[in-house]
Amino acid sequence: MIELKVKTNTGGESGTVSVDEEKLGGKIKKRLMHTAVLMYHANARQGSASTRNRGEIAGSTKKLYRQKGTGRARAGTRKSGVRVGGGRIFGPKPRDFGYSIPKKMRRAAYKSALLAKIKDNEVVVVENFGLSSGKTRDAAKLIASVGLTGATVMLATADDAREVYLAARNLANVTVKRARDLNALDLLKYRNLLIEQSVFEALVSDADAVKADAKAKETKSDEPKAEEAKDEDNSES
View (tube, rainbow, N blue to C red):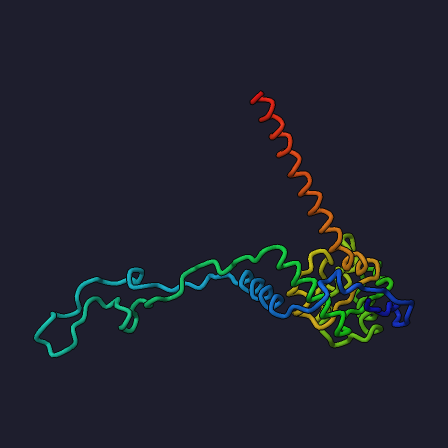
């Protein structure tokens, strides 16, 4: 078990929160995190680079001069890729760089990144943000009071925390995102994770909920199979 200090929005301490390493995979998997980060970066690429080949260049397709007798190297159209102003040979065209890794790998990479953040003391748990006013100065005061001034901060919020988003969206080096939308890249890209205690506890215990949902889906998918088998037996009889 890992104990994290819980701070108040004024910088004081209000208690601790416990984290079970086993719920987060038990160990830090660097290669898996690297694989996930590569996927997220690839999926973020626009893939809009485009050049014109010799068939797309405007100009005549007439041969520049006769094949023999000039003493020069043979040449065809002026749109050839070896001539100035010609088409690009094997140039880039719009394409999709995106790909996907299995959901279990993505989730394992996310839990590993969260565990690494916790072990490196880069997770700041606050009892309550206290940003109901939606004012930027209040968000700046909160970040200063917990000692994160000048650092890159991922501020994880609850689903209905619009005031927190309004208060922190204009601060430099601060990104606001819902806690349930976080992924491995979000956790590794920013130095610190600033999160409320209730949201953090739900975030850490979410792994068990996902496993329970998966088991429920498996049992539901098995039920129709059993009914189909009964129907087949009755039809045979």
